[in-house]
Image (cartoon, rainbow, N blue to C red; front, side, top):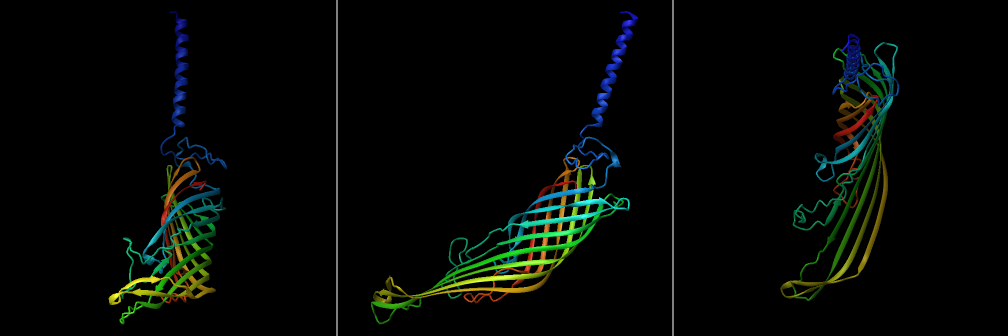
Length: 385
């Protein structure tokens, strides 16, 4: 091979190796690491741009502009005091949480401020009309005298919760370990609409077997049916203080949010009661020794239908708090999937359970103020948070 041909071959080989090296270095730069950092060249609204490089500590500490967050809630909510099991029992239901707002950089370097709006809805668990007089094995529970107390159906847990709060937010400079604190203050409105129902049926049979050997005896049979339905709308309006704290590490973001609130509760309770009283004269046939053999059907002689519809207004003070914990994983630069937990509590002052009942004298409270608590898990996503 001539010297000239060797030089040409070496030149071609050098060019090829340079191309391979450039390609390899490009692959290293753009390699999708498992936990890469953020590039500083973030433009507005490039929320779904992939994370493809490692830029060390040059990444922004938090995002600015519009943000949105959605969480699907699965939570357990306490029952009313008068429900089966009382406040020691709770029932699972679901709901939705929406957070959205806007953050912009403040005049002071490293700080920002903006607005946060949070909307929340917890669905009705619809745990209604359970018979407390029937045990799990199907047997009927009697009173202390051994007499049947009839069929009674009581609501276990039924309600709807709606909430909206508007907050002014300040984002502080990152702390020495990189955590970001966001205190906020705002106004909040909650509606807790509780539904409680009692259905009771009782039959009274005062017949006594004759001692004179008579073969027939007329006796009075009475049937009483009670239906009491209570709706209580708790309209709570007040203020709240809170704090958000978050910290990023690679693609992971850990955060917590705590709120404390105080409300004036304008509660409206509507109670609709129905009482049907029926009297029937029936004839019983008796055999020897006073043993009742049969009962002949009779006709109702009296039937009373009473409907009572009343509305009560009450004003109460209540306070409480809300705690959220979440862990997020950044799928793209500004799109994050999140999992977390939520706890919310209102102190004594929420109208729940039945109102007053003329037909059911065991319950007298016109406004049974009590607590309301929820605790559950969340799963969702955030954009530009």
